[in-house]
Length: 298
Image (cartoon, rainbow, N blue to C red):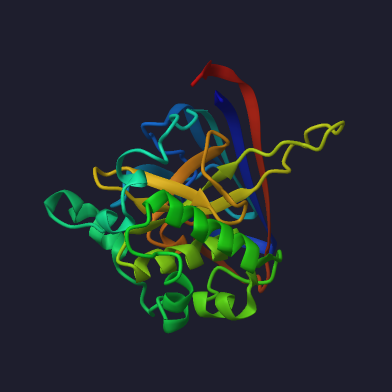
């Protein structure tokens, strides 16, 4: 499998029926620097031009972008552009090391796991319910390798749940998703995370992009890609094993990682506060993950 180079363009447009006098925003649009991922170029622009903007590194190591627009406007456009290189997984990474060892050994313990403990804790209000524990129990049998258990969890969520766009919101609880057996990528990631935490494992919510391939004979559509969400389980030594229940697979070089947190609220691509008399607003998002070239072979 080849390593990949992507040009990522993420455009968010807000429109308002009446002028907005002030907009405060925070976003996560900067791809992470990881052992398997390198950020070659990155820039964020805001229109109208903000009177103040800054970048900072949050508690989890993500890059957050802040801005304040003080001029009157009825449209706000935030654009993130990145050039990112992503490595293919190393051969045998699922059968060697912590991924190939019994899953119980990946429970975070000791000083070297101190930063992972936060990812083991349940949300408030709790998401790890008896229903979640019952769902996870047959998967995490004693002595099973971590990779085998994660693959089983990934495949079961993919099989048992139906992808239904618009069926949930960012505030939909895991219990409701378990009851409906339907949702979108963020819901399936959160179900997986709850199952992992039910077993004492540290799990993170990952926000990013997935490069898609058009059907045979069809041209690739600019802007057809979207933000995506998946999950990851912590490995002793500080690495993460990432997997995507929505697409029934482990994460590979087709994925661009932007931010990692305990839940969606930690890594929302864009959120903010506006001051206006308008009672409504609309938002549109266009994401394009364009492959530039193969940059090597694994």
